[in-house]
Amino acid sequence: MSSAIIIKSPHEIDLMRVANSIVAETLGLIKDNIKIGVTTKELDELAEESAKKNGAFPAFKGYRGYPASICISINEQVVHGIPSKKRTLKDGDLVSVDFGVKYKGFYGDAAFSIVVGTCSNEKKKLLAVTRQSLYLGIEQARAGNRVSDISAAIQSCVEEQNLYVVKQFVGHGIGAKLHEPPEVPNYVRSGHSQRLMAGMVLAIEPMVNMGSSEVEVLSDGWTVVTKHRTLSAHFEHTVLITEDNPQILSGSIKV
Image 1 (spheres, one colour):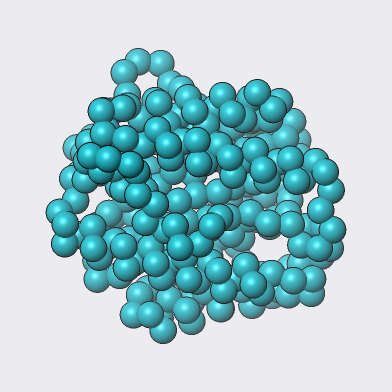
Image 2 (cartoon, rainbow, N blue to C red):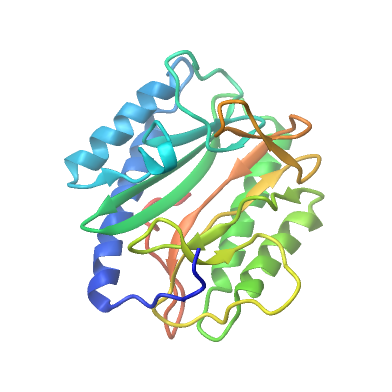
């Protein structure tokens, strides 16, 4: 990833608003269809149909060889879970769905986690803390702040609740590419981080584990799981930095 920071023009921002509204609409549709007995492949097909109906293309499909339109990660799976006809949602499953589109050359990206049916107290806490950390991070996405202000807000929220941020995967800039600089880690790295400027667009996405921050990739080359097979949750929004308050471009779905 090059280090050059890309400021979006008003026209580019308008295209990203549309892209992210399609993402939000599609994730809302998926959320409504997450039920006991549904296969993850059925949800993937819903997402692809929704994107194409809106004149967009699923951003993940074919990206670095990824075979599907959504990433759907269940229980100990952190991110990049591949949809399957064989994986049926069961009562109590913690399901994380990540989806992006490309619309007229620009990208949108968002994610949410939800529990199917019965939700234990530990799962409720994990979801609530992960979601809260996202919005606390977004609150710091202001011109004049640094990326590390976002990272610190997320990390402190999570660790105060004895949970763990994933460190091997991070948020990112987004625009004409799905992944642009700067990286947006969910923990504070040493050294100075990038100063935020109006016109930057960031995909902020805390991934939070129970037990430890350690993860590993399964033999399919994609699915990331917690090392000790503890639960994980993931929330994400695409956010525009302005001279005033941050704008959540994918905000028409309350993740």
